[in-house]
Amino acid sequence: MKITPYKIIKGIRYLKHYGPKAFFARLQDKMEPDKVPYAPWFEHHRADEATLRKQRKESERFKIQPKISIVVPCYKTPERYLIEMMDSVREQSYSNWELCLADATPSSEVEKAVCSYLEQEKEERIVYRHLEENLGIAGNTNVGLENASGDWVALLDHDDLLAKDALFEIVKKINEDERYGAVYTDEDKIEEQKGELVHSQPHFKPDFSIDLLRSNNYITHFFCVKKSIVEQQGGFRSEFEGAQDYDFILRCTESTLVGHVPRILYHWRLHSSSTADNPLSKRYAYDAGQRAIEQHLKRCGEEGEVSQLKFFGFYQVTYKTKGTPLISIVIPNKDETKTLQRCIESLQQTDYTNYEVIIVENNSVSEEIFAYYGKLCGEDYREGRMCLSCSGTLPGGQSVQVVTWKGDFNYSAINNFGVSFAKGTYIAFLNNDIEVLTRDWAERLLGNCQRERVGIVGTRLYYPDNTYQHAGIVVGIDGIAANMYPGMRREREGYLHKAALQLNYSAVTAAFLMVKRSVFEKIGGFEEKLAVAFNDVDLCLRAREAGYLVVYDPYVEAYHYESKSRGKEDTKEKIKRFEGEIEFFRTRWISFLKKGDPYYNPNFSLKKCNYALKPYKD
Image (cartoon, rainbow, N blue to C red; front, side, top):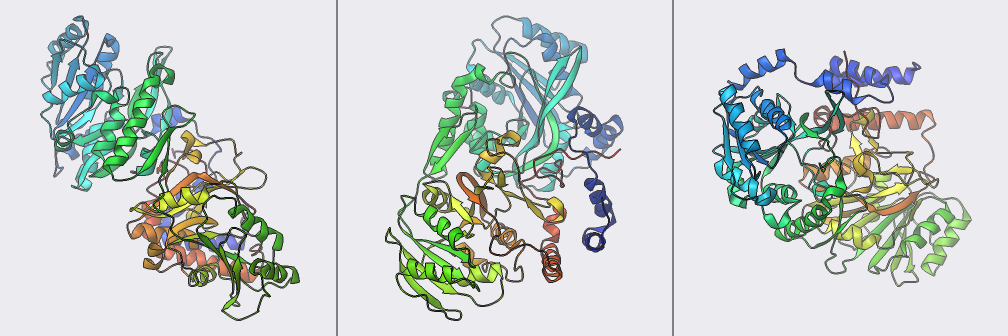
């Protein structure tokens, strides 16, 4: 890494903001390898015996020490898997638990194995019940729930394993906020190779993301929920067999605060008949998952059409548009006639007709662009200062205005100025170098933006060479924020398909987004002290601070030719301004940056933009 004066100044600022510990961690991040192998990473991070001893003592000091009932439906469980599962529970560093086994095996083989185990281990916290008939996973689990006497319920499959610190970490999270009604953890897969269990395929999850949960049951394991919520929801429903856990999780998380422990604490066993290894083994489950989402939407009072994606267990929700409200499209522009023309023509491919276009002219010099303005408006462009310069009608009947901003380039101020001329209840911000590829872009963005909890909706953007430019923004990467998956080929979908799923991020790019006008005005619009950099991230963070969700909608796609009007940050003046904006952003959002982006697992790298595993330090 080459040392330059700029990097020294940047380092000093980082040290000032984050302190020595974070500063040196960042230096190490800069030198991290391209790929971190998971198996040794896991071994490094798993709780050792010294840690487990500390946890046993610490758990005795917890203010809240709930009894956790771990419910396991059993059916023809191989004895070795059964014993390993029970061992993993008995080895927990948190001791206030019970294990409720509901066994629907027609023969007595599982019962004999459990009875022998209980006698040998003298374990009284394991409750066994043999069912007279197999009621299916949902019905069998409900029998286990009937036997549960704990304050909380946890779900464990009969052939899977818990990390020894799983319950401790769950209870620790519960003690952080008494409002939590459900908590989940990260997970991985285990497979026996040459007599040893090998860990692979880690699933590092974000904090609770309602839109990701509607796209895929990303929570799955290890899921724990208050017994009172289970009773209120009525347990599992057999009509969702195969996706009974998905339906259960959706119902349990609809009206409570949900916590997340970002540690691998659940190990899902891979073998030929498991869903983990063979998704085709449960095709019916994906239909049940679709129905679970559909009913969830109805309970939440949201109208949406649910369809299955090409990869099993993943779904697309298309929200129904309510009415045809006016959308005001604000486009800053300087020169670039052909670029602007391509942008406007691409917008007009939609079937949605109730929109207006507001072009904010900023210090253009070419005669060509002024002629184009006149052509758009059907009248001569009248040069003015900070005023409406011309207006007209697009071929589809939509209003188009050109308004003049004669100040220096300030992306935030220009867009705020454009909004002052807008009449719509929803505002779409577009850079002039955007070419929209999705015909129903307006309906899709509007359907999402009309949702009560949603404030801002972003889109999936590509460079013209068909590589990603934007698939959501993670705050904290490179010390500030960065787009996800830049340069990845368009046909790829990234870590667990995240580039192709509707989900929540802390921010999306303003190169192409929609925002409720009421939200935009409530939070004061774009921050004009951020003239060029991170103004969209700041806008999104303020929307989230006000209680609104930011949604990434990958089904609205566009080419982004990127920053043609503004040019590069290649002068001393521009670099100084850029550094000042970084300082402003860090100062405003220092607490957020220190805590970390809730939609980005802390085990991921803050150097790379592709959900790469963060290397461990020996």
